[in-house]
Length: 487
Ligand code: NDP
Image (cartoon, rainbow, N blue to C red; front, side, top):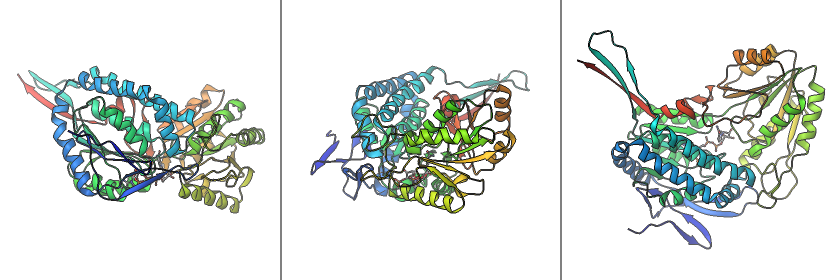
């Protein structure tokens, strides 16, 4: 059988959907993918229609029973082989990610290697997936609880960590015996197709992994409203998460939603200020502030506020940023698109009109083409400003001064989001008190925001439903089956 992988249209790669183990010819329209640092046209990708979505779901459905029947340790071997391929091609993959997404090359390389490690980590669960034996009320009865796959998973990806998110959805799905249909973001599909090219080389059984590319309202809607989908695993905005819930409702499809955050960073009077500044800066300039779990608002104790703001502003002002394919030593690249840049401009402008003072940054960066915004610190912020409530997703740190841990926690909890939070203090009792009081899925003490693959990345309120990573993330991709066996 001929494998159609990539054809050429005036030197620009044209990618094809991957359905039932084949790159399939696509005759409908294409989407153009561009580099956010300079507007360069990078590729054309399919804008799939409903029939292509249905073909992918049918292929995944057909493959699922045989895939689940394989011993988990055999399924694990495929994940290990894909991980090896990723490591061997890390340099190429990192460049693909950087060109379409805009993150600096060093971070893209971390993303590729972390993705490979994640596949290995999830493969390592093959011999550890466990059910339970439950004590019965009846003599001579055993109650067994089995863990079984759900069936076909739809994985809908965002653009901020597009490569890692493939593995975060696919690895737990496949190791537990599910098959998957992936829809990459139309902003960043190239890395997903390059991942798939490598996956194709390990001869995974046809239909186990499928990629259908297109828009959210087209492919996304067709996937999430399809009755043959058994679970939707989505990462992205609250608005899209709500739309997916509505699409899933008629079929009562299981949902796993990671919908972002407004992470508070609390800096107490006894904090190591240099550590706090370095960690908060790192967690805001990484990926140009476009990360769901990184510091989005700061509450600093009044006793150290002036000193902290001065140090933070110097650190942010010193950030090296620009076109990541032109300079290798950068800390930050452009924002993903014009809409994101417009959102940051509008939020900072509104904050200024509400009384915030720009200590550093505060405008579009004058460095040529691309969606670049200056690293920014805003002082004099207060809790009823939009910038202290809504997700910015850009390199802007609004700071509010507080009188106590209790005040900081109260403000931190008064948010529609509840994903991550961080606290800087040298006093272990204050740290433990903060952990008790914070209504969040994750809290980082004296360190930058970045979760471990063996943890559990989950939030409360509008930050989502369910979570990812570790044992608990793995079991999200299973259902239980209880059997009562009377002797
Ligand atoms: P979206 O939530 O719109 O997009 C994420 C994914 O969902 C994309 O693949 C998108 O498709 C798809 N999608 C969009 N609409 C639907 C739908 N009705 N049904 C199914 N799938 C759909 O995020 P944006 O890219 O528009 O980013 C907007 C904001 O979302 C950001 O500024 C940020 O605040 C937040 N966000 C949070 C992320 C996180 O890590 N939690 C990640 C990304 C964004 P496509 O875009 O291809 O049309």
